[in-house]
Image 1 (cartoon, rainbow, N blue to C red):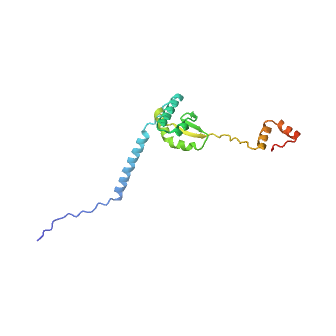
Image 2: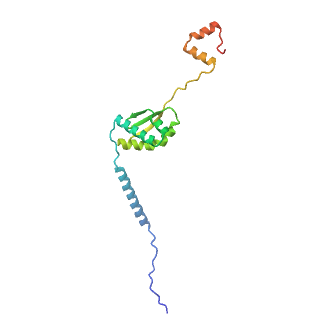
Length: 165
């Protein structure tokens, strides 16, 4: 006859609401500790001169030259203005914004590490350029000269000249 072995019956431990709440509280405490540690990280904000900025800028240009980015190098040679920790690059063409978008992260990282200042920001400023109206016809040429030299208009009227010929 087979013997019945005494097996202990166990049930699966279903967590109670109290267990779930305590686990959530532990996770929230861990997250708070992590966020406090992140906030405690030191932000570098050392002072730098315009000469330091020029050197860091030139070294980034050299890096881009080595990587073969002629378009990026040409972009980096545009004028820039420093106002505290904000560096504004002046551009005339909106197409250059695409070039800036390509190198923005690398440029910021390079400047921040080279100058040891995490507060540095680089912005773009699009300068409005006066579009020069091209003069093609004889009438346009005459009007342009008449605007510059008003005596030509009176001369044309006295001599009954037609500028279209």
